[in-house]
Length: 95
Image (tube, rainbow, N blue to C red; front, side, top):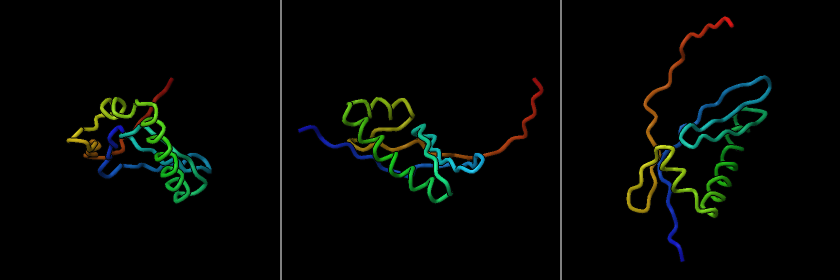
C-alpha cells in the first residue's frame, strides 16, 4: 500500500471580480474557481481544489506538480510556498 501524502499549510487565495462573476485563484496551485458571489467562489474553490489534488494523486503526478509550483517536502508532508506580499501597480498601455 502506497503511503498517503499530507499537504499542510495555508493556501493564499485571491478573489477577483470579473463582470458578474467572482474568481477565487490560488497562485501556489495555479488553480481558479468561479462563483456567483464571493462566498460561492470560495466554496467552489474548496470543491475544485479537493478534486484536483485527489485526481493528481491518483494519476501519480501530484508530487512533481507540487515541486514545480515551489512546494517544499518535509518528510511525508508538503508545505506551500509562503506569500510574502500583494501589491497593485498602475498600468497604462497604448497599443
